[in-house]
Amino acid sequence: MRKAKNIKLIGVLLIIILIILGISGCSGNNSEKYGVDISEKETTSVKDILANSEGYLDQTVRLEGKIVRECSSGCWFFLEDETGTIFVDINPSGLSIPPKVGKKVVVEGVPENKNGRISIIGKGVEF
Image (cartoon, rainbow, N blue to C red):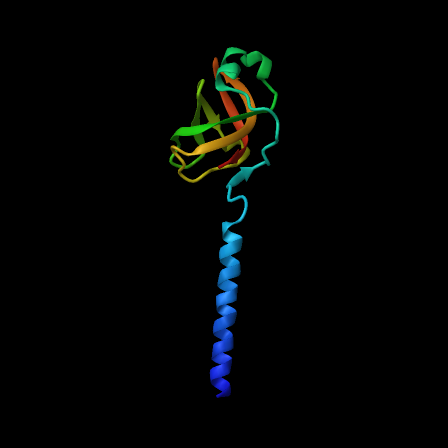
């Protein structure tokens, strides 16, 4: 009799734990973050960076878009917003991401002019 009560108590406790875990898994922010935290600064468009690259060099910018192409190692990708596409290199920051082609992304980084090509050195990435 006592053994049956203990088994019943364990079963009830397991159900309560599963409910708590289920509720906590459904709440809030399930974003994935890599590198530095993304600031709340205004988002800059790809078009603005490409059109006025000198004005953005060595300044931290925030971009939003989707990944349209990605390195198989996850060390770089192309970000596309409604105004254009730009190369984002996260390898210099020691970052890599899992495959995310087609996913929305927020990036914070610094524009760079390398041999006449404007790209972003990504410092933080969030999905």
